[in-house]
Amino acid sequence: MTRRLTFAANWKMHLGPGQASDYMARFLPAAPPRDGRALLFFPPAASMLTVAAAVQGRSDIRTGAQNVHWEPKGAFTGEMSVGIAQEAGASVALVGHSERRHVFGETDQETGFKVRALLAAGMDVMLCVGETLEQREAGDTEEVCRRQLAAGLEYVETLKLQQVTIAYEPVWAIGTGRNATPEDAAAVHRSIREAMAARGAAGRVTVLYGGSVNAGNAAALLAQHELDGVLVGGASLDPAGWAAICGTDA
Ligand code: PGA
Image (cartoon, rainbow, N blue to C red; front, side):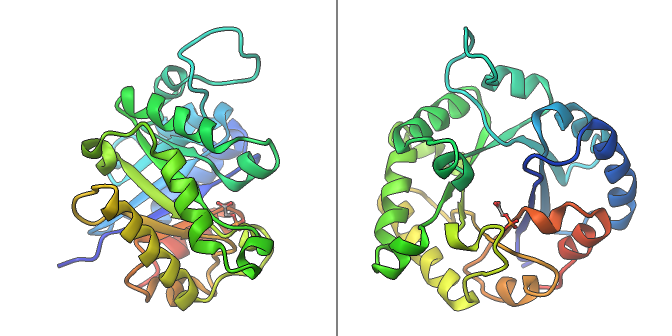
């Protein structure tokens, strides 16, 4: 059976609509659809429509939102509702990315509200969890990830767990050039799967790894069957480089 793999690009605060359009014109021919592979793009909000339009006709590629607010509408300057994200072409959203947690002070409870709002609207969720260096050194990695999972999934009915993908991203590995060894990543993935099974998730939960993934380490990481794919920031910004990573043999 073909292994199912997901390659998710998190552009963060890079690539406006014009650049996104040029990117897609170069990326799409370089990354033809492959059996069992799903590709995801999380562009900045202003570029979502451009990306969604460019990937129409490619059923293997979806557009996602980097962040949403949990309220359906109202006086929340600078925020984007789930409904607006959907209208802009998103069918999935990141929740609890470490930059949201650590740069913008997003709480565990807020991640739970966001997950609830997304699932209620029929969107899929990519819930990000991961420990800081301090927490890792204190031996708290699994506990931190389990706590973040529990809070993020607090309002999720068991049946809807299928709409949730987990991204394990150790904070100390994001944008730093350091990454977990494939074995370390796999061990945390196993613990995440156990936590999801204990929560009632049926079947295999998709668990991605993120944090300084690049063309040089993607194959070794993906050789671990605990990894169902990767969530990539910096190395997804160049269309040719990202197409090559999406074509990694695994
Ligand atoms: P990075 O970012 O690949 O640049 O480390 C990953 C992420 O933040 O999702």
